[in-house]
Image (tube, rainbow over all chains, first blue to last red; front, side, top):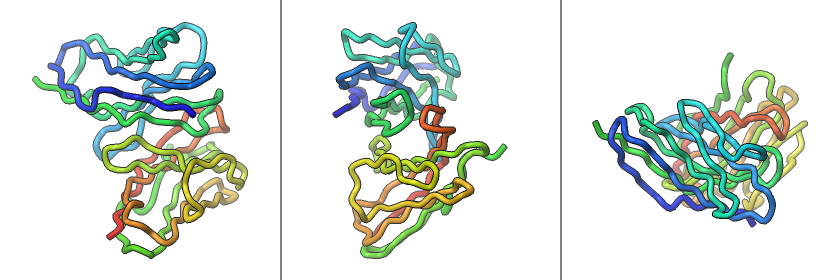
Length: 114
Length: 112
């Protein structure tokens, strides 16, 4: 069965600093990987996704993520965070090339300090 | 263009009762998925509907059932509510099984 681990429950960074959120997955075949963001009182919004090809994927809002098969990781990065990036971030994996039965991690809450 | 809309936004029920949650997909979308998000957890897949049929199902008991209507809107029904059913229920729509999922803001259910 597929699973996703987000080891960091809560991260605090200063505005303007760089960010890296960790995600490790477990899946037997090539995974279909996602990062979503959830702001308070909002639904989830897709930041980026990976299925195949270039292992460095670009997303919205200046985010990027790198797929590393050898480490079973799909870490999310941003070179300079803004106060508006404060939110909950979820990594997810799907077993097929599609959106069926996404398995989400438990999330990382990001706090931005001035 | 309206996104995914869910109703009600909040509701309170007591144990043993039944609840129906509703979802209208984003315009042009034909597939609806439901997720349960308990406090402090990531969303868990309940099921997905396409062409009025349940296509995929997660590890949820039969107390959880759903329906999709010809206009692609969907309902989630939960019978014999338990305290552990308290959660945010998220609806997501997409165009087919490969399209991007668009999530609604959710229905927050509290079971007392």
